[in-house]
Length: 404
Image (cartoon, rainbow, N blue to C red; front, side, top):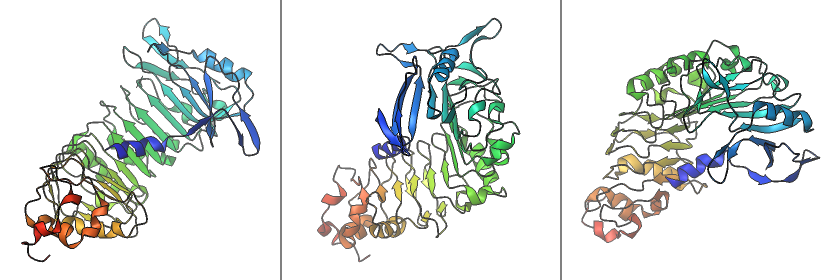
């Protein structure tokens, strides 16, 4: 479990320093107050506007403050603009609104933009002027919003982008769907995280035909909606050929979604935190030319995995089956995976089976403990229901078992 979350954090982890040489030029943080500047090696400047004080109180910054900071500073390019907490404007009829005006950046360019509307009382409505990021429209590669009321967000401020590849929407409400804007078709990564009123999954295969990564996490869609979504992408003209990463954790799934084995380039599947009981044969059949990287089934209610459930090139894969109810470790399920992983040069490749109540007093483990003990190095966290680790089981315990 810890390894999964460390990996996810590492995807966006950078080394913070205050001064370094970037493409032959020395980059130094100027005074962006009331925002804060940091240098993230090797990417460049990151500007944070608004944060939580030491006493836990939220420190807000107005959009006008941000605009003034960019007016007086000289750095032409910012790697990441993090609008953590902008001061809301009070509208007589509609209450508090976070309004991002035209030309927020003056003449500066930004590669990644994040907007957070979260408050103690709940999400604030977000409104963004169509020309808010005009100076950077040819440079934005990633845009994300967190904790916002999206009832008035129409994405027109991103219409003229040419390099936008990634869009993330987290913990937001009143999302009205994806309008038919051409730039969506270019996106390679879409992440919807803990938007529990999100019901626009049926637009994804139409609006985003070239997705390589789709993360629909914590959206509680359920079996029927997820199956229809995966089926629509698998049957689309391009989605079947482009999708490489699929994450559907915490979606109230009770079974493995259909059509996962249909994708020609899929190498990463995350079904963490659902209520899946069994993995039938043929559930995860990856193309032989594709090297599986991660298969995550942690924290379900798995008690059965059938022979033939996992097929493909797992030589470099990390397969997480931890925090389930598995009692058996049969050779027909795991031996081929472990043989592939044993030949790997990657130390992380393996089966992660922590916190499963494996029964160790019959012959289903003889193949591993007695006959192929060298494969134990690729089994992480194997433990009997009585607390005995797999590594501490003696081969002689299984002398009475017939040859494998």
